[in-house]
Image 1 (cartoon, rainbow, N blue to C red):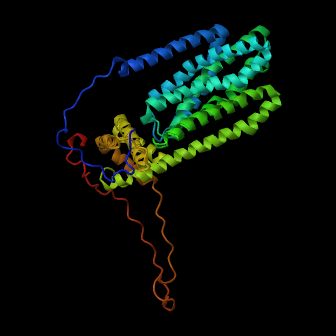
Image 2 (cartoon, rainbow, N blue to C red):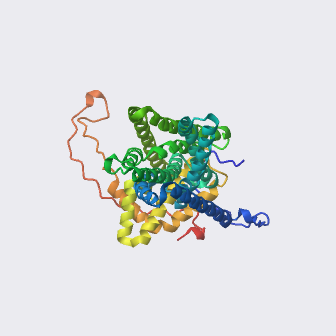
Image 3 (cartoon, rainbow, N blue to C red):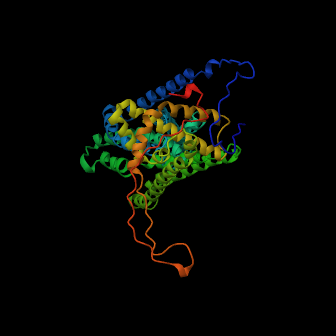
Length: 465
């Protein structure tokens, strides 16, 4: 098991300058361990799942119903994806993780849910000779277990194979939410397409149609339902990511607890439809809306906590000369980050803006790496990873530093001047004389001070720009 240092070093250490102690052994991975083989297999699996789910939904709804359902189901998707991407702005994860999560939810998880739910419902109906009871049992018991397990598989895969990108609660929430958004997208196509087919048979149109009612319930009232359920699983994985490696039992129990809570909330939501209109509205108002508000507050609070972590973990690198004194404050403020990118784009164009964006991402990763090391959660490659991140920062500091210093000057709070004291603050009480009231001089304008060159890596040429 990999061990991590209890506390990170205050300053980066100089890399070894001599040759390695022994000969290097080059090992060639087996063909199934090559990245392109794994990526190819994953893309093939998702593509086949997408084709099968497309055929099943089209067979169920018809071509016209499929197109109508697709046009209506896509409406909340950009809003939900933008919301999860906004939550991930402090330390943005790679786009490939989000694409995988959405594709898994829309294709693989949806296919597993449709096949498993249909099989289980038909088996229960045959065994009990009660089709209505089988539908109710399938919706309230079978569907929550199958669907939440299928969606949790995407979170588990990212947690296991993209561990460097999965560092806390926000990462778990984003991956789980994007997966559930993809799942809800496919499910809404099926429900809306089926409702449209029913209206075609009955001739209902307008507000009284089944399509309008389904659209109102699934798109207007509860577009966040599936993301809300699966986010609980993501929180469980996020808490597990924050635990040290030595607490293996807790790292397993936390995701399971989150999955069970997701299944329970999903079952309550599906079961509310059997309570009539008043029962459904009561569950929606008394449980779903407060739960959504509570989880939203938790995620936003966690996001602000990450910004505080950036501000508190980067000052040691200021003392070492890797960062300027104003950078920890600027990097710990989303407003300052935005101003820095705008400043770089205005005076340096898109390449400078991209350099500032990458600089902010690498600095945030460095702060989180140091935070994990101080709490005993960094791997044995802490020093190597720290050196890599410092090198990436140093390669971009000439473009990013002026923009961040400009943002810090704009967003820094004004200095607070103490009020004038009516007497001398020192000396015996009998000697308190009136203090002359002199106006305070205006503070001097901000003058950026030259930062010292980073001493530990000064002679390490690959990290110099």
